[in-house]
Image (cartoon, rainbow, N blue to C red):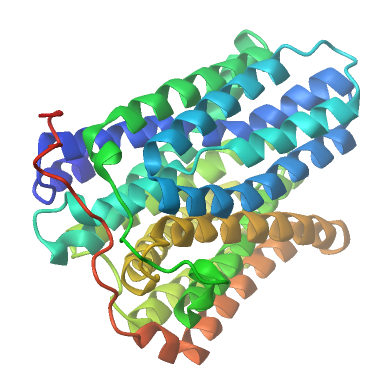
Length: 415
């Protein structure tokens, strides 16, 4: 893959590349979880309404648990939090997979909530490590773009993989596979010297409000909520459009094209240096994202047209993500960088849930095009949030927050 080859020119050692690859594999179960949880709940209860409740509870729990675990990482380091979270979430997924048909809905809801709360903050931990893995600090934005592109692969591969396992074996087996990969991948990530050596800034921010006390973080979280609404609108809109055109199975390929567009956009962004550096550049990236999704409204009458537009529209996602991630590393208060990255995941989750719900309601009254109009409108809101609060993103860069102990740990092993 071009992005991996490009990464080799940016990172400091083969060990740094190894931990990135491990983190991507360990995050694959998260891309499998949503659809696996949905189809397994339907299998156990026969109710899509119950499945919607279970999935919603899991999404909210993921959003709540991420910042809490991120804050704990910033206080205690990565190793213990990741090991405990990975083992617990993996075991709970396997327990959910083993439930018999006819299990009470309340049991499913409780397990789904516990899984969400226990899910290890792998993405936040990896992104807090990235600046320390590069040869040159100026290359950090490009590395964020590469990492974002690589994560897109999990969203292209994860849902079809989960559905394929469910069809060939069982819905429970798909969840069990996700649990095993999550536990094993997280343990392998936590065992890497780079992760074990990571330490937060001594004496960093511990005041009330944590990462969100900084206006710049409030702005970035608001932007990610809007992007989450966009993502939720497109996911529901693609499924509705495919169904309306008589080919429900086409929803997966449509979203796959959208993901491939994002992958391509991320690779190009990495090669061009890593995306926007300030508010003006970010506003331009988001404007392109919004415009392309507004254009999708006119393409809902044809699967071919919609697929082509989504491929182009997706190309703005990874550059937007990478730009924001690089800004977080700069503006987050010292000592809470993992929590700051976790808040972005929470913002995406909550925005996505709101976008999915709103899109579903709009489709009932106005058809699939309304969902894409919602997505485009959310992109416009993200642009407005960036422009109106541009002054908050111009704050002075924060000092480096990651502390290394080269006398004890190297990327290649413990000395």
